[in-house]
Image 1 (cartoon, rainbow, N blue to C red):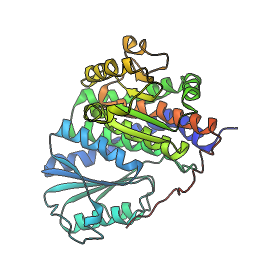
Image 2: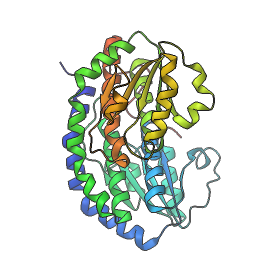
Image 3: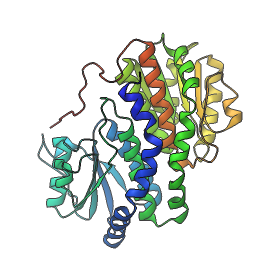
Image 4: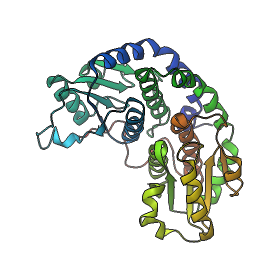
Length: 346
């Protein structure tokens, strides 16, 4: 019998197709207003898994819109009551439930200051939706397991749409249409990922390494493994990993390297070359056959996967790895200890 978490994972191809089709008109309208208002910066407020989606937005909006993008510090709006000036900017709140009070407060204050506000959530009736000028609703249905899966990739899909239409880049807009098929392709590796999980099942630690657009992917996969498997899973940019943390590696240490083709690929190739002599247990997630051939734990990505969309697709094998590790360790993936579906922070 499938767990709710597994069911949610396997719904993602159809949901990604649905999200791209159903939100086109609204995203076009929002992009048109953004082009008209020409905000000087973007500020993004989020917590938990949604904070990893915010990191993705930070990369895309910086790269394609060429405006400064920062992550909000919600405690400045609540605990310290000294919010920064947000005039002339766009402020985006990202939350699966839309209920987190400190994120809602960021949107409220931003709106009061005259900034354009946008919420991305799965609940159209949430406080976050009601306190934003525009609200994009994911409409992926109830996510019954506590750990997020389909809501996360849905958030990334909406962010990618907003970036593509705001930039008015026809190539980016066209590439959005491939997401559902590419998600389906990576899910076909479920059994292979189960076997890889078996090689990590007796470990209580793991490192996930990526670079650039996939920095958010390292954080999200590590988070899922922490939540579900109660392992010490650390996420690093390959650049940061070289500045000290590489010292923890030794023979048999579990490592997951995320290396899709693109601008960051060569740096990840170099990172793998540095790791290989240490005889770690290295799994590689990539769409480059030469790199995949260097490990006995390869996880393939679609050959035509654009780097800017790769975080959406590369996250899915990470979800499967967390699922299988969790089950092999004898835990319940739907109800991790100490966690709630909606976490309220103030």
